[in-house]
View 1 (tube, rainbow, N blue to C red):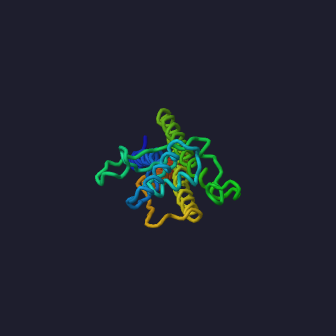
View 2: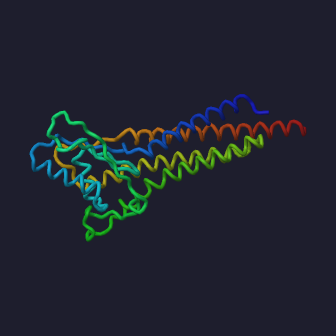
Amino acid sequence: MVDNRYATALVIACVLSILATVYLSVAVGTQHWYQYSSPTVRGEGNISDLRSLYEEFMDGEFDEKTYSDTLFRLNGTVGLWWRCVLVPANAPWYKDPDVKMVLECRSFSLPQQFTPKYKEPGNHNSGEDMLRTYLWRCQFLLPLVSLGLVVLAGLTGLCACLCRSLTPTLGIGVLHLLAGLCTLATVCCYLAGMDLLHRVSMLPDKVDGSLGWSLYLALISSPLHMMAAALLVWAARSHSQNYYRMTAYRVA
């Protein structure tokens, strides 16, 4: 028999774990981790430059300098796997003051995720920036590790339920704690990487950057995983202590 306190703790931990996993999955799959706000474009020359940037962004070769400049100037958003710009739905660009704007996105392919970052973006002769390179790789690998740990914890919990045993609960709690730490590390790596990017690629005048809702979802999922871990560890430890006390009492 499982004490009602432990059962309640396990149910709450499961709910927290599901919420955290859903939040993290949505965050990983969306592009609103960081967003730029650009001023309205005036003049034929500027419009032509933006059109060229957009075409290079959508069809050109992958280059950090090119896509960063495009994001800066076209109200871009960037996530772990996506980069998007806000452009007019129909040509000609910006002729109508009430033109409808649409979000056009490109994904980061797996090889692009492992592409080195350079001390001067776009200049391959400037030398590789090891810190930015590994921060970028960590920010897309760590959430996958986090989700993998939660899946492993879920499978372990399912086996424990089928066996009607609370023994694996402590291990499941530790897996959730590691998942929460990986998610928190993801957010830290992303913020540090963006800060370093803005140091080597200065934002144009009147362009502002801000954190997006996808990043906040990831940030929320981390403490949820940790709270689930705390409940699971408490239930495992308390049940184990009570079990040993009952065993000692029966022996006595």
